[in-house]
Amino acid sequence: MPGPEAAAGVAGAGNRGAQDSEKRLAVLISGRGSNLKALIDACADGRVNGRIVVVISNRPSAPGLAHAREAGIPQVLIDHRRYPDREAFDRALGDSLASHQPDLVVLAGFMRVLTPGLVRRFENRMVNIHPSLLPDLRGLDTHARALAAGVAHHGASVHFVTTELDSGPVVMQARVPVCPGDTPETLAARVQAAEHRLYPAAVEMICSGRVHAASDNIWCDGQRLERPLLLDPAPETKKSCVGTTSS
Ligand code: GRF
Image 1 (tube, rainbow, N blue to C red):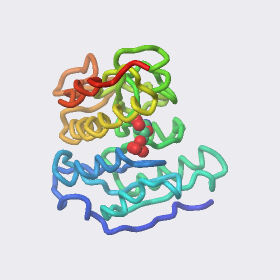
Image 2: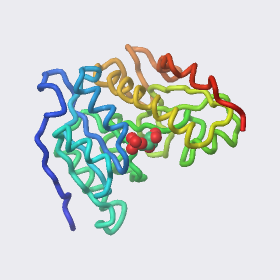
Image 3: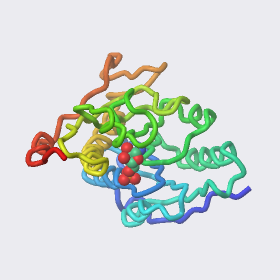
């Protein structure tokens, strides 16, 4: 059985100096890693009281690994193609994660469906970002599907991961307008800009202890969260439709 291939970086260079209260974050990526970069920046400038202790990719060519490298964060490659089945891959992934003792596992564009065994291993300690206003538009191609549905608003959600895909309790959402003339690409760019504010904000709510998950619910400041927290819209979001035309 192949073991994880570790490419060591210089621990901590992209994070502030270790602080007692800061949480240990493990970030999982498969691709570009723009959300990883947003989290690295937020840890570095104190918006998130956390330290990214490892970045794990299932794809050797994931461009996002460069962000970890530049920040001096240890990277681990666990190539899913080298494992006989999903269970074996998830066992290796879970063992690697556990060895880094994360307080929170952060999925940031990790394009693998996780087995129930792995999800349970990190129950209430694993979050994902999904490009839609959940429970709407679970699954793939959310931007094209939002346009096809003719919705006025679209966005992104940060949710705790449960065994059902894109269905765990939602911590926080960011809403963006759908503008006249939008294509899946222009809409994706608007959502992704919002994601880069949303993910650090949601992760910080968890790192600070204000938000936690228990018994399929989210608790915020001691109260059961009835609906997801909503990220304040960026000042430029309202203006983003100005000047666009219907096609
Ligand atoms: C994001 O749009 C996120 O919502 C989805 O995957 C994408 C990852 O983008 N889960 P990046 O790799 O962080 O740039």
